[in-house]
Length: 457
Image (cartoon, rainbow, N blue to C red; front, side, top):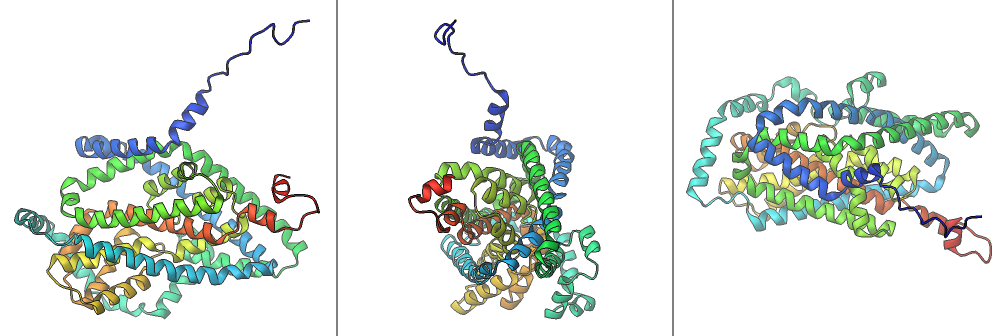
């Protein structure tokens, strides 16, 4: 009989699938493709515009799973939390997180804006170029002035009552068809509360169906992750081709403030998730990569919710029920990116026109920005941007001409805003939601069995 020593051990087979998976999910690949997209947009804009429809199709695939996952996860989570009285303790933590995030966001963006002074342009040639660019876009300013000299019909819907009417859907199926995320979220919250009052025996079949829908959506998002690197390259190239290098140069100081603010939040998010999950920092960064690529390609906090849940539940092993509840709620409440835009943008405009803001003015900007950011959920980037006119109106700052500059770099600033908001939601969710390890340690165990042995079992 031949023994094991008769035949030499076979070398491990080369696995092309594993190699491709590692390459596509490497942070280095992401950075290389972003750089390649910028170069393509600058030097070959025709190619960037030609391949743009491919990325748009991919974006549609990503966003089509958002509402089914949102409906299934929120209803299931609310129902589970209602049936578990201990879960009520998470609601005050959400409110506290909104206050803390708003204060820190205003302080971070305001401090960087005052220190770096992005709107202080001393170079005469730069100011001439700035004026030339604004004058060349005069039609945009004229259109804006007409739209901001608001018709009376718009003012009738303003105020708390108008906001409440917009939040409550008259037809939930119509809200689903139109993609009204906030209205759908409100319906899911109320419906989940109602289902939680139904006897558990009757609600079991619904819970199983919702869980199946949720898992199917997660499988779809895992399939779509393979196309993310290519879609990132295409969309970065298209955005760069649309913007061009001149506006980026003129608005460089403002974008630096936005970028540093966003980078600070992203680093803090990685640190919080790594500490709470007890993972290494590099492993956490690699786990974040698909989420960050989705943010860059979609520029949508709502579209990123499935990937936030996938990161924290599937990869980092946080409690599924709590994460599925907290992520959608906090995506609607934690609008860090909008705070950065409003605070940094208003201070930029004031510096651009030589206006010195007093301490009272800065306090007004901070409080107003935090409150105004709460109303931006579900809004497009340009709509969020246009609301800066409200803050400029308080301080009697000219907004129409500067609006042209913000429009020119909207693709970049909107991406940074979304990165900041999604990173904040991920970090706060990880800070509040219990980890599976903590749940295992809290459960009573038989004598003689250590927590490690129980968690392994």
